[in-house]
Length: 229
Ligand SMILES: N[C@@H](CCC(=O)N[C@@H](CS)C(=O)NCC(=O)O)C(=O)O
Image (cartoon, rainbow, N blue to C red; front, top):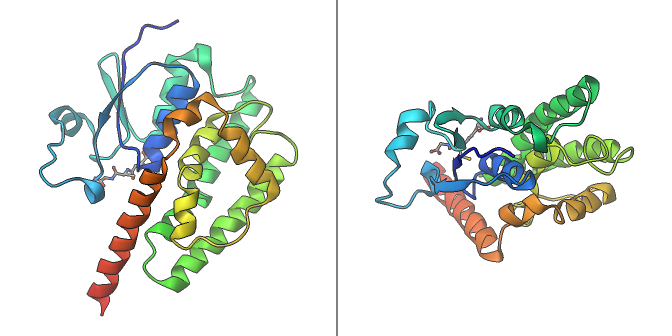
């Protein structure tokens, strides 16, 4: 077992941070969190840690520090954890199986995250609806994957589940912000399975967090729409 020291600079509301925190917790890696709220949710007067400013190239969370070395950007971080903590991998055995996981990670990053962000940053009903349709279309592809395995890329949870943890935590909030359409039954069952994973406990949102998320984006909409008129 490694005795590495891991620090995550992140924030619960950031779905990219959630990916990393889920992966750390799911793998049983011990870590400490330095809370760095993204600009949009940063309280007035919050002092961004010098260490974060010095090492995060784009000033974005998540960033991790492992034994004194830093890396930002969630997917590279997930890969770095694979390198550093080989004994608790979220990749299956075999090059072909790993390639499928990596392809699906990229696919989800693009085809689920874009419309998801479109829903909560949407200010116009038509665009929110369009994002919603694209999101549900992506769920149909996930449905196809889940027809052949209980997890998104095989018989065990992988990095693909880490990516979806950042989506599943906010699903109730997304509904309240305009996400429409029914999730395929297979996806609903997958969500249920994910909620029993050890990593889930660390990233799941309380009702208060969902309310906070929804409230912030409703406010954002209000401000944007007032500026348009
Ligand atoms: N590509 C990055 C995206 C990370 C990202 O967009 N983080 C947002 C928060 S969710 C951020 O820190 N933005 C800078 C800011 O708002 O201060 C990743 O996958 O880690």
